[in-house]
Length: 266
Image (cartoon, rainbow, N blue to C red):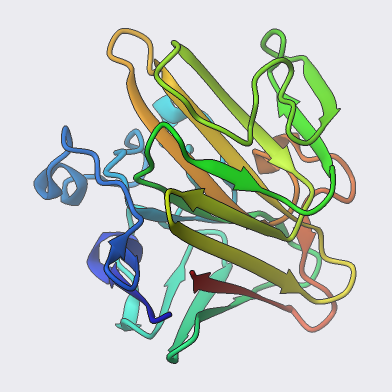
């Protein structure tokens, strides 16, 4: 099945469309305009426009300080849609190259900078799914749920459990919101007859995982809405500042680390 993506280089290189056949998978936040997104500047809070965000060189952080979702979401990228790059203030450069064919979409990433620099990179895909959608993951991989059951605590469990919430299914809004790290390099999203299959990998020794953002009307406080994210990631933590040894990707002696993401439909 044909897979196609569209991006917006002027607004952080974000993914604006991901289609398999006639199915559009990306959710767009109806409460956020492009003008609001375009007005974002370094140090301002993250603007949740939906779509797909390139979270780099961290994922989570202090939203009030403009650190949530990393340091490239508000910066214009340079290049062309299928070959573009973004540079952060700390000397790391993220390059993205996209290849399409009739069977799948492949996105190749390269991170360059000073040897020994740690980082995280997540492709934060917010998906437009029905209440019947399900996630399929091979086996029962480890799951880490930060700030659960309270802020500062960590729950360690196995797929699909997230401390009492099921990560493999959605259902109607229930007022909950949870973010979890799943130690796996593949996931399938099933929604009705449509399937979105994601697979990714990297150099030997670099940690890979994905984040699940399951927000069924539990976030943000005061004006919650529904959103659901599946985020293939190089690394295995929600925030660089909180990463334990072995959970962050680290640039080796060459000052470069490559990883890839493959998308298929069914």
